[in-house]
Length: 158
Image (cartoon, rainbow, N blue to C red):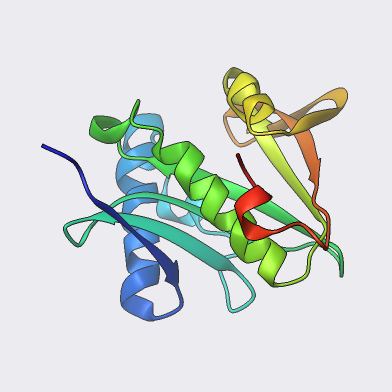
């Protein structure tokens, strides 16, 4: 049976609730992250969320927000455990990149957990330097991807 996933650019409260649900279920319970620690100053009006649903049920998400006029930071990339290995992480990043291009940004940064660096490298991200950033319980590295303003949406990610 073919699985069918729908992409939401979460703008309404119920759609954002889907992003929050995936984050709490997919990471917070496993790593004992409290709600106060999970939700920060970036989870506000300037933050955008991609949510993937299967038959209306949220299963994967990511968020991004502006760092400056050219740059956004992608973060909180989470896939529910029972949906991992289905390329959904790739799908939420690709969908975020499409939206980012439409909004006119040219650069994306993210702080990858060290265990996920290879995943992001396959998506065209490069390490900024070898500096380790401690993000709550996780060792992370800053990664970067440059987008062309003229890049077609289909070329955001092959």
